[in-house]
Amino acid sequence: MTVNPMAYDRDNVFARILRGELPCTKVHEDAHVLAFRDINPLAPTHIVLIPKGEYVSAADFSATASEAALASFMRAIAQITASEGIIDSGFRIIANAGKDGRQEVPHFHLHILGGRDIGPMVRRPG
Image 1 (cartoon, helix red, strand yellow):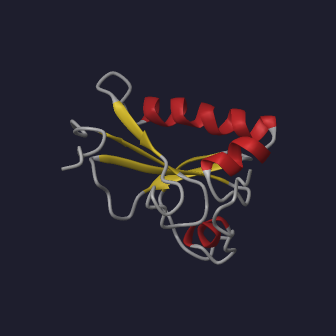
Image 2 (cartoon, rainbow, N blue to C red):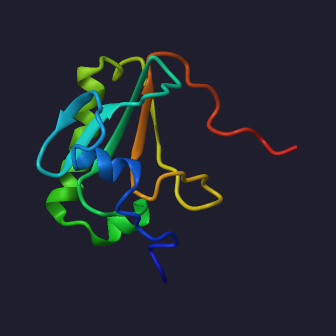
């Protein structure tokens, strides 16, 4: 079993943000994670949450990250959704992985979307 169907690219946009080479509008940061506003938001609240380590996908992160990194990542979701005021109205968390999941950046990340009805989870085929 492989947890890295894509190779990690150290020049991907999120790696460059982590190194400070590209700007972002931070909403949360700790020793293990960084969260910032998406530059092309799809909802009134659209936050991107990334681990600071080199993880390609959710499978890679969950299989190889430290307990501290895993806990920090999950706790960041609660902190961000509370500070953004979207806990009561609801929100969606999306993680794309691999070709069929339409992952565009080979660095594990979550999109946290809220502030409006996000719509159905996926379109039905046909």
